[in-house]
Length: 399
Image (cartoon, rainbow, N blue to C red):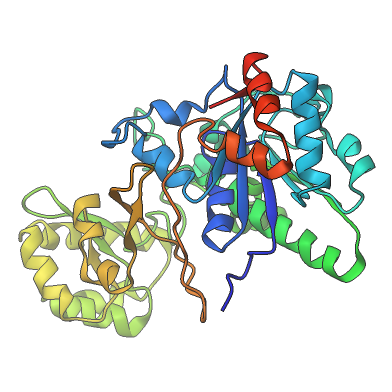
């Protein structure tokens, strides 16, 4: 059976995390992705350690697996012609870009310019604040979008000073940006299949983060209540929390349903806590959580891990990344795979989490060096050898 998205051909002008993560998802599902990368402004993820034996950053190698790399100086008119040829003659009629609003148009490859030569074009823009509004030209990062979304206002402990550190993964970048981009792009593809019409897809990471704060926002919009740190059922305001063990490790305790709560209390030898725990009033919950803390701190991490491994009560150990990748569930789900590097040697990576019947992702290679496929792509378009060498000499193409 063919890959589900093998009919999609995408030019990816994005860098760093949000855009490449989105196109990684699409590549894992079979889409043909060509990354367009400026020779004089390489993707900064290429510099992130550690680097594999082939010299490529492990993080860049993950985000850009199975994609081809075309090094192209978009400020050169000949580069614009190459992009147009890829769009019109080679069928790369989906664009993913991550520049600030107006940059692609200034380079000659904006939505209206490419739509004029390819009416069915799907043009996806991923930015911090979108193509409209007073912040559309404002710089930002994941932490800034989370701050403006309201999410950070109820993250952390109620009495914590200084404030808690940034989250360990980029919620706004990936959750607010990458995932919504994939959804918007595929929605545009489905509509195009039905109507023949292209589309402009405008994804804002701030919009996405605000949408992820939908439950908190609903509490304010309907009840005029601002969520507060340790003031909600799931942010430390109840026994649903993280507890320290005797040896400084941690246990995630989440037995919200009565049957799970009862099983948890029985497992720790505190059946007297069953009735108090069923009262989910936040003030009441905080008053008896110290009882749970004391019990959990009376035994080691391994004691609790071994005990709760046998029980189905929504309690799990907080694993290190090393422990997580070797966990039996991770291995059983084939979530760690070998991907060939550009020199042919295997590199372990986290696999696609999308399990689709009749489809096994084909991980062609890890992220390629800048311009690794430039000559191959130019030959595909129809450029002769001397024309290709002239483009290199004129610094239009690199790699």
